[in-house]
Image (cartoon, rainbow, N blue to C red; front, side, top):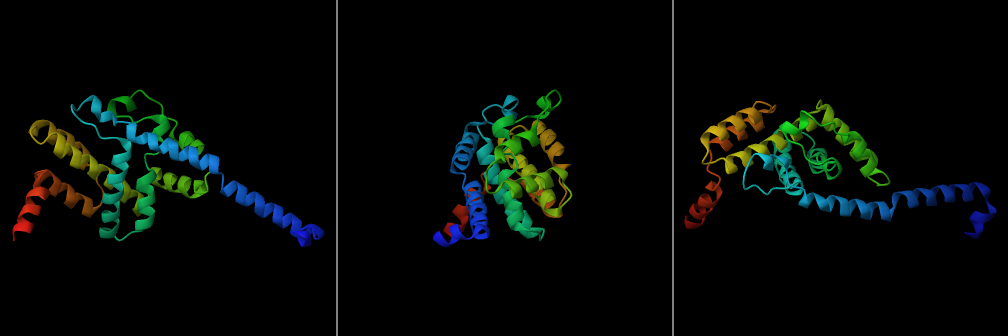
Length: 211
């Protein structure tokens, strides 16, 4: 430090570096953000307005989408790492905007971009995540298309589960969701989802263990 103090150029560089570290390690901002995203587990999804007995939330939805997204990324030969990040953060702004269903969206103006920017302020990952979220919204890259398909497949899995004994509504909801799928892999999985018993994995486990 004594040497830096006698060298004005080195002192200036040291101050810039310290400032950079202080900004990068904004512990208050990071901690507050972690508490904020923890609230997503208490934010139930808005389709609850129409579907009785559902209790899924934004947090577990994002977890499922990330798993589906990683599988789709592998099948579609695109960047798994980017897909995973996009999946995990695609609904984070809903901690501030709330979740909206088809009905809400007809009458509500959401300031999603502003919410994302405010959430990311002071975080060391801000630049990367905001870029990824913009990519997701534009839906031009292969990764963003895969993430949207993962989001839709999660909806179809839930619809198959919730409406399993209600063929009329199951068909209506799944037709609406399935028509938005873009990748071949997602379309094949969607077809299988619609043919499947939600408990089939359990019955298959019993068969596998018995053999």
